[in-house]
Length: 155
Image (tube, rainbow, N blue to C red; front, side, top):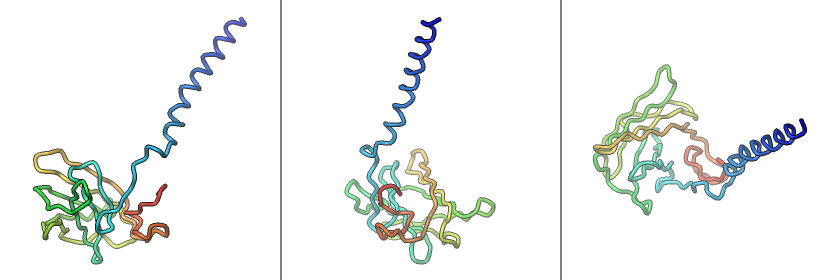
């Protein structure tokens, strides 16, 4: 009977030890990606090559700027972009046209300071990359950027 209790205690300790490892590893900030704003002060969308900056202009249109490895703007090269934002019951869909070296939306994002947004970018002949986030147009007190592009740790 005593050996069953000892065996159970050892198994329980082993189980607890194995489940605790991912918790400690996840809490490490050393491997967290560094956030940076784009050249216009917008949100950089990673996961696509080249990376893209999502920026809301003063007239609430969306500007997409593609970036090289040094964060400099490069001309669009056949990518298509669709942005859907606003309430799910009545979403606003924005399409884009090339204006200079950027893509500019044909309309504005819906009114409000916090707008749920889905960005879909399809590079020529490749799979669509989707980013979902809230476009929060409040100014961050730390980095002074709009909240959707905030570069502060922990935001």
